[in-house]
Amino acid sequence: MIDIAGEKLSPEDYLSDVRPVWCPGCGHYFVLRALTQALAWLRIPNEQIGLVTGIGCSSRISAYVDAYGFHGVHGRALALGAGLKAVRPDMDVIVAGGDGDGYSIGGNHFLHACRRNMDLTYIVMDNEVYGMTKGQPSPTTEPDWQSKLAPEGTGIRRFNPLGIALASGASFIARGSAGDQKGLSRLIVEAIEHKGFSLVEIKTPCVTFRPEEKAWYKRMRKITIEPTDDMILAAQRIHGSDGFDTGIFYQADLPVFQPHFTEEKSIEDFEKEFEV
Ligand code: SF4
Ligand code: MG
Image (cartoon, rainbow, N blue to C red; front, side, top):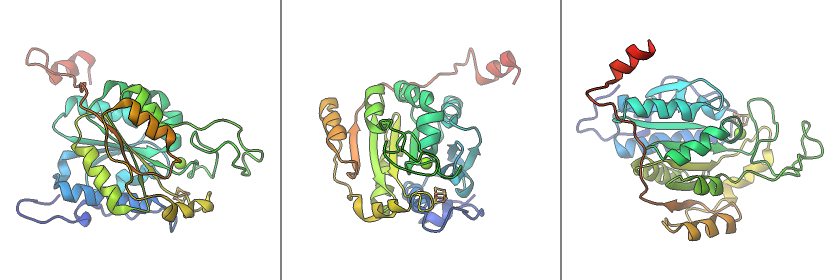
């Protein structure tokens, strides 16, 4: 931990001693850089950050950031993050993971996290594939992508994370690109600063199992979308986009759910009641 008083912080101040083991060229390196840059800009003390992740290549990120971290249960990161925020509302709770972890195994948690609108930041590193388990199609994979594991493609329409977040009640919905690190840092800053559930969906190439995605580094457009609180306009932008636009598609001031532990019933009382 570092003493931030009077210091100018750098992304390195938020890196742990654990060396990333992602494949060379993996987009997740740029996401790690963008996240640590955002934390440095915001000057959040390391011990005030809770970084909760699921399972998958991208979920390793909690080991690489110098903060309180939990890397543990496939698809359950949002539930754990919500629990942490419930008892430590003073902390900045960031939840992170991949498209398979968040939209398939954790799909139900995603819907209800949007609906609750707790003050959480959810970073999804979407590479349209299960990377860690060697290249199965994920919910965001296009139906005709042919691979060893799905030689004919899946034939199943894709999950639309931004559209589903909007319909489910999220109050901040953004898409960023690993290829635009500065723009991505800004989106993460805005997401952390926003009061409510913030989705930052990041297109980040899996260069090992989907090498064609390297084209995203050039193809994704730098911040093209400015925030609106008009749901109809946001829906038009989300469904009208070809998927290569980045920016904040929707941001609104909506009621934020935060459980309250009163003096009459404190967290200690709950611990006694549930014997934890
Ligand atoms: Fe990144 Fe894909 Fe390698 Fe996983 S398998 S570290 S997602 S390039
Ligand atoms: Mg993935």
